[in-house]
Amino acid sequence: MIKLYREEKSKQADIIEAEFRELVLGYDRVVLSPKDAQQKFGEGVSLPVLTDNARTISGEEIPAYVQELTELVLSWRRFQSDCCYVDEDGKTL
Image (cartoon, rainbow, N blue to C red):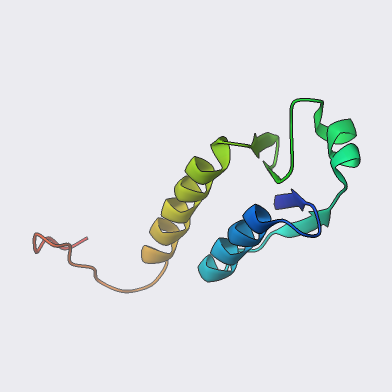
């Protein structure tokens, strides 16, 4: 399960949550103080922090992770129905 560790007021965390809502993606929201975050994740890590099982994502890694997650979710949903898809070249998927 994906967890978003964030401060109560954080523009960056608000953006992440908006993207998750747009994807209709389940996640847990954990509100922490910066001090609690340093105790949990170490001195060099600042909020917001995402965890995905054993993986920890923070700082400049977040946009790439969210993009990777978006592609995975869209791909997963694309092939989870009984539909036929035709790509832009006219090939059936």
